[in-house]
Image 1 (cartoon, rainbow, N blue to C red):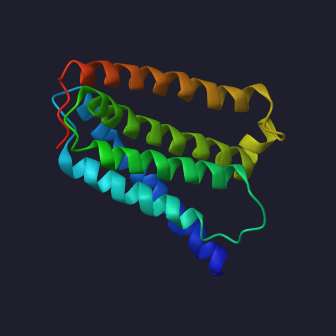
Image 2: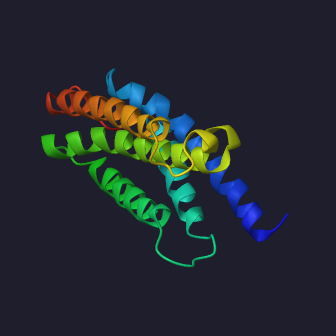
Length: 161
């Protein structure tokens, strides 16, 4: 397997694991707090997944690189907010994993339409309705999750850690 092949497999596997581990962390936002193990595992996996994205050969600034930088910035803010007691930081902590999960879904959809032949045929230029739906529907859903998380955190029902 080539260097790029190894990085592709590692990056994809880490991204999928981060996505799966964040689901219980986000579900915890709607209960009494984020499960510590899930939140810690998600943060670690998401950071490593994002970092592995920078190991691909660099030819020019791409949307994937910009998304990776944004994802790392979001995760950095989440880690900082985790132990801050104010209402603003609780809200930030509550919204951060949702935003990070959305970025994983966003990139996953883009990659699926690029690499899965059946999807690529539906949206070869990534401007067709199926691709737009695959981007807009998750955006709306995650925006709703983020709002609910922020409201609950602002009321003090979210206790990180």
